[in-house]
Amino acid sequence: MGLRYDLQGAWSERFNRLSYFDPNATNFLTRFLPAGSPAVRGDVFLVNSRNRNNIPLEKIDFSPRLGLAYSINSKMVVRSGYGIFWIPNYVSFSLNPLNDMVNAGATTYTGTVDGTHPVNTIGLPFPAGISSPPGRSLGVQGTQQFLTQVVQSITEANPRDHPEGYVQQWNLDVERDLPAGFFVSAAYVGSKGTHLAQYSQQINQISDTLLAHAAAQVNPSLPNPRQNVTLVQPTPNPFFVNGQALALTGSTTTVGQLLRPYPQYVSVQLAGQGSYDSVYHSFQLTIQKRFADAGSLSVAYTNAKLISDTDTLTSWLETGVGGIQDNNNLRGERSLSSQDIPQRLVISYVLDLPVGKGKKYFAGASGTMDKIVGGWGIDGVTIFQRGFPLVFTNGQVNGTTLFGGGSRPNVVPGCDPSTLGSATSRLANPNGLSASKSFNTTCFAAPADFTFGNEPRVDPGLRAEGIDNFDFALFKLTRFATNERFGFEFRTEFFNIFNRTQFAPPNTICCSASNQNFGVVTATAPGTNPRLVQFGLKFLF
Image (cartoon, rainbow, N blue to C red; front, top):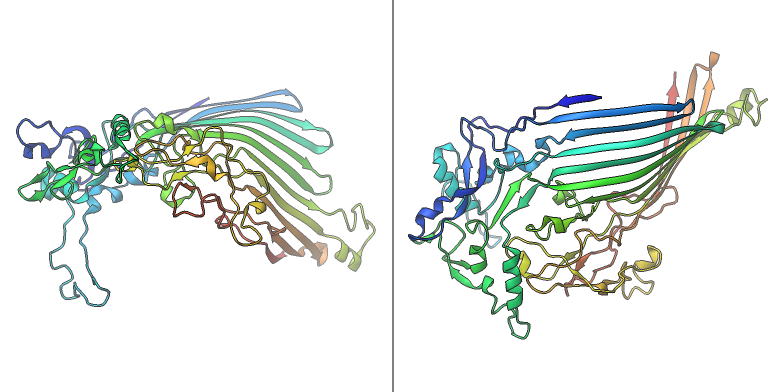
C-alpha cells in the first residue's frame, strides 16, 4: 500500500496578464444599454497580484496505490492492483499562457489586393499603426473591450469551476506455469477517466428549447424554408453605440445571437475544462513459450471496449475523431470512443534454428561446414487488429450549427448499414465507372433543419479496415577467431512482407449533394507502407 501526494501549481505570468472568464459577472457592456435593459452576463478579467493564476490551485491530489501478489502454489500466482493518477493541467494546450486570449492582438499586413500592385510597402508596412496586445496598461475595461470587440470568439479558463482530471486504473491477473516451458497469464484490466479535458468546451450554444421552437417554424413549402424562423431574423445590434460596434459586427445581428447565453460573443469556450469521462474494460491473455535451444514465442490477445464522451486534446491533428454535437447535453455524446479497439492479437517470436554444431541437425558439423549451416535464426511480429469505428458528420447545412452546435446525420429506422464482402471488393469497381460503397449509404439521412441527428458521436457498428501485418527477419551469426571472440551478424528484414494494403476509412460526410465520395474509400491509411526490405550487418567484438 502507498500514498502519493502532488501539488500541481497553475500557470502564472510575470506581469499578471493572464486572463479568465467569469460566467456570472455583469459584462461591462451593460452600462451602454438603455436603462431598464437586462444585465449582460459573462466577462473577461485579468488576474491580479493576490491571485496570479487563472485556474485554481488544487490541494486534494492524493493518489493511493494498492498492490497484491499471492502465490497459490509454486506454479500459480494471483496479482492485483489499483491506483489513482492525476492528470497535470499543462497537458491542455489551451491553458498555456502562449494561448491566452491577450495574445490574440494582431496587425494586418496587406501586401496586395489584385495580386500585382502592392498596397502596404516596406517603407510603410502598417499605415494604421501597430495594434498593441492588451495588458495591464489597458486596464480591466480596455482588455474586456479588446476581447469583446476585436476577438469576439474567446477561449478562456474558468477559475470558479475547473475540476481537475484523474484516472483510476485497476487489474486482476492470474499467472500459471504450464508443462513444456509454457507460461500463461489471464488478466482483467480496467480504467476510468474522470473530468477529462478537451482543448476547450463550448458554452455559448443556444438552448435546445429554442432550437426545437425554430424547427417547428421551418416550412419546406416556402422558397426559403427558414423564412418564418424567428432565430434567423435580423434585429438591431444593441451593442452598436454611437456608430461603433462594441460587440459583434455592424448595426444589426440576428435574434438567435441575442438569445445565446453570452450574446456579446460569437463563441465562448472554456479552456481545458474537465467535463468529460471515459471507461475502459479489457480481457488480456498472454501465452509465452521458451524453447530449449534458444528463442521464445509470445502470443498476446486483448478483447476490450472503450466508452467516452471525448477522445482527444488535439482533434485538429487527428482524423476520425468524434466531435460534440449538442454542448447542452454532454450525456448524449457518450458512445464508443473513436480509439476503441475491440480485438488485437500480436504474435512475436525469436528462434535460433537448431542447425549446426551441437544442434539437433548437422550436430557433427565443424570448420567451414559449421560456419555455413550454423548460426541461422528467424524473428518476427504479426499483428491482427480490428479497425477503428467510423465517425459520421452531416455535410448539409443545418441550423444547429448557426449558434454553437454541431450536426450529425440521422440513422434510418430498420436499415442495416453494414455491407458484406472483403475490403478490396468495396473499392472502385473493375470497370472504373463507379465506386463501391463500404456501407449502405441510404441508411443515413440529413436531420430536419434545427434538429440534431440521432447518429451517435462514434458509430457502434461500422469500422474502418483493421491491421493484418507480418514483419519477418532472417539472420545469420558467424563467430570466428580464438574462442570465437569476434562475430558478424547479417540480417535481412521484411516489413509488411506480404505487401498488404491497409486502406483509410471511407468518406463519412453525409447528406451533401456535392459529396460523391460518401461511403467510398479513396486512400490508404496514413503511416502505412508497402513492403520494405532492409539489410543490416553487425560486427561483434
